[in-house]
Amino acid sequence: MVYKTIIIGTGPAGLTSAIYLARANMEPLVIEGWQPGGQLTTTTEVENFPGFPDGILGSELMSNMRKQAQRFGATFKTGSVKSVDFSKRPYTLDVEGLGELQADSIIISTGASAKYLGIPGEQENIGRGVSTCATCDGFFFRGKKIIVVGGGDSAMEEAVFLTRFASEVRLVHRREELRASKIMQDRARQNDKIVWSLNRTPLEVAAASMGLQGLKVRNNETGEEELLETDGLFITIGHTPNTGFLGGQIDTDEQGYIIVKPGTTETNIPGVFACGDVQDRQYRQAITAAGSGCMAALDCERYLEAQVHEAVHV
Ligand SMILES: Cc1cc2nc3c(=O)[nH]c(=O)nc-3n(C[C@H](O)[C@H](O)[C@H](O)COP(=O)(O)OP(=O)(O)OC[C@H]3O[C@@H](n4cnc5c(N)ncnc54)[C@H](O)[C@@H]3O)c2cc1C
Image (cartoon, rainbow, N blue to C red; front, side, top):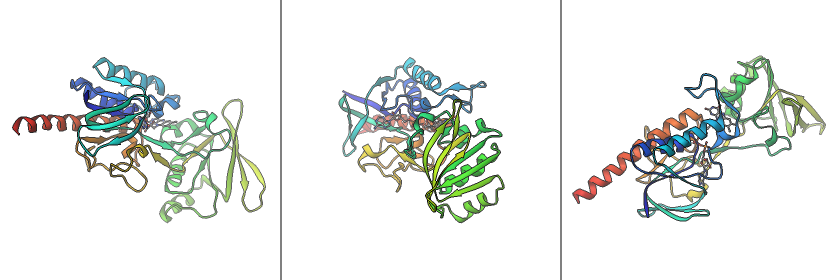
C-alpha cells in the first residue's frame, strides 16, 4: 500500500498537520516516534497556548490534538523512523517495528531535543525548577533567584529576558571566556540583576522538598566545590534537531536543522515538507510549531493536487 502522506512525529507540528490533512480527506498516517505527543508531554502547565485562559497540562493539550486528528480519520502507528529513501517515488521509510512504509508525500515534524548537562539531579527535576525554555517557564519565577547555564548568545539572551521576572540571575559557565558575541555579552554585563559565576563546572542539581535547593559547582581555579542557591535552573547549551535518521538526504544547515524554502515548508526534495522545531532554530514554541504544521499540510495538499493534474495531462 502507498499512503498519500506520512507524517513523522506527534508534537504540535505533526498533530496540526494531521488535523488539517485528515479534514481534507487525505487519510494521513502518523508515526508517533519515541516520544508520543512530543516535548510538551515532559512539562506540566502550558500557560501560553491560545485558547486556554486557565492554562492546560502539556499532556492533556497533546492528547486533545491527537483525538482531534483521529476524529477526522488520521491513523496512528507506534514506531520510530530509522532511515528514509527519497531517491525515488513513492518515498520509502524504514520504521522500527513496522518495516518499510511508502508514501507519495512526507511531512517531517520530528522536533529538536534540548541538550542537557548530564549531571545528577537534572532529569528528575525537569518541570520542578529545571527548564530549557525561558520563554515558556520564566513567568513561574517572579521574584525568585535563577541560574542560567551556558556561554553562548542564547544564554545571554535568556539571562537578560529572565531579569524581567527574577530578583537575581546568575550566569554559570565552565570557562572564563564566553562564546557569545560581544554585543550580547555587553547587554548581559550592563544588566545589574545579572551576577557571574564563570570558570565553574556544574556537578549536581540539589533538590529541596519543594523545588530546588541549588546547583553544586566546582571552581576550576581553586578546585573547591560550592552550592549556588537557586529556585530555578535554566540550561541553555543548545538543541539537537532530530534529523539523524534522514542520512543526509535532505538539505540541513550546519547544526542539522532542515532548510525550508522561505515562506513555505518545502524542503529540497519535492513532496517532502518540514515543520516545527526541526526546521526552526529561532522560535521553538508550541504555537509556532502548530502554525508551521498547518502550513505543511496546506503545502502538501497543493503538491498532491498538482501531481494528480500532471498525471491527467500526461
Ligand atoms: C520542558 C518543556 C516545556 C515547554 N513549555 C512550553 C510552553 O509552555 N509553551 C510553548 O509554546 N512551548 C513550550 N515548549 C516548547 C515546545 O514543546 C516545542 O516548541 C514544541 O513541542 C515543538 O513541537 P514539534 O512538533 O516541532 O516537536 P516535538 O514536540 O519535539 O515533537 C517531535 C515528535 O517527533 C517524534 N520523533 C522524533 N524522531 C522521530 C523519528 N526518528 N521517527 C518518528 N518520530 C520521531 C517524537 O516522538 C515526537 O513525537 C516546552 C518545551 C519543553 C522541553
